[in-house]
Amino acid sequence: MNTECPECGAAVAFDEAPMAGEIIECEECGVELEVTAVNPLAIAVAPEVEEDWGE
Amino acid sequence: MKIALLHSRIRMEEKLLVKAIENSGVEFDLIDMRQVHFDLENPDPWRQYDVIMERCVSHSQAMAALQIFNMWGIPTVNNYDVGMICGDKIHTSLALMMAGVPTPSVRVATSQDMALEAIGEMGYPAVLKPATGSWGRLLARVDDENSAEAIIEHKMTLGSYQHSIIYAQEYIDKPQRDIRTFVVGDECICGIMRESEHWITNTARGGKASNCPVTPELAKISVDAAQAVGGGVLAIDVMETPEGGLTVNEVNYTMEFKNSIAPTGVDIPAKMIEYVISVGESNK
Image (cartoon, rainbow over all chains, first blue to last red; front, side):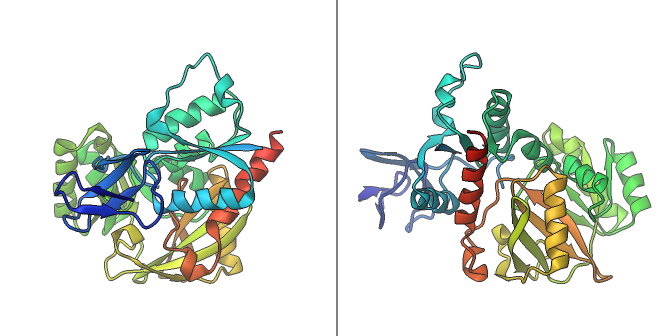
């Protein structure tokens, strides 16, 4: 499954079937991307880390 | 038996948990917290779940959901009270202290003068931490009053309102490492050593993980800490003191574990899901 990085336009490929909500890093520009839908596949720049995020 | 896994962003941990649920054969739904809304007068759509596992990366979103589910009587892992305690370092310290679990001294103040007086009494160095926060962010080791004064002024001036509550923790002069243990129910299932040349040893900050054998002493302090905050599926951050003892630094209620499976050889997500299923079964 392939798509394009919305930040730099580089090809983004998935080895396994992606999951909605999954975070990946663009290998070209390094931006964090979030899979927003899988059918059809859509990705967007992931939200910035918020202050209350963590474990 | 039906489980819901409530999430926001899908980290490696959530993918591993999904695989573990699939391997268990239990029916489940993945629910993105950002894609749902709650009618507080109508819990029926959620009653199809025997247990809900909460894995949101946002503490405040997690608390909103857990509050609703638990008020409706729907069991969650972890539950709201545990999240409240672990998500607030003041609350965590109090829970550990009241349960008699070794933990560093803490002073809390709401003004610069009182914070400096409190840290001065406790002694330098000290560690200033946001009461809410994770991944080792915005921690400040202050070695003297000048640096404490500067950091506190910056927090008071530039930080959000939460930063006006000054949480100052005794600095533990630990080796270049700390310990993270994983507690599931009443068992400490494994532990890792996190080594770093930096005094902040979180793996999120580059600390390197290796297996840490779970000694009876380490198992006891870990399980005691987990029970002090209410129990469940928890990661305990433990430090070694210069005197040779152990002290509990923090307890994490939505633990990350991807870097800990290989060094420990323990299938952490499988153990977590076993526990979640047991909570769901006890609800039937």
